[in-house]
Amino acid sequence: PFTGVWMGDSKLCAIGVHCGNYITSHGLALNCCTDLTWFDHIIPCGLEGKGVTSLSHELGRHITVDHVLEPFLDSFQEVFDCTLVFSEDPG
Image (cartoon, one colour):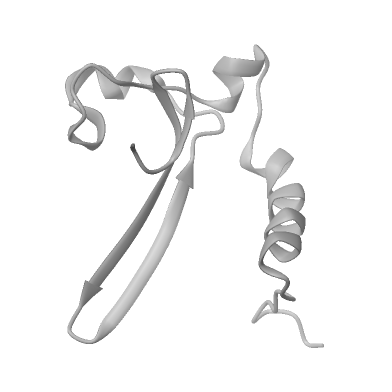
């Protein structure tokens, strides 16, 4: 019933969409090696009784964004049947 990617009662990845002034923006936040203690001071995503987790916490080892970026982008292209184009890439 909740958006995002969950591990039990803890959110691993937040997904969001914003619409306004005829512009739609969207994004996600995948917690790789996030300091989870910051979430002790808020109610994450306004969901009382739910927690937040990270890949590092779940796997028991340090996982950085660099570790997941390429596999994530590969999966994105496969799922959405598209080719990603990077602005800094001259080709």
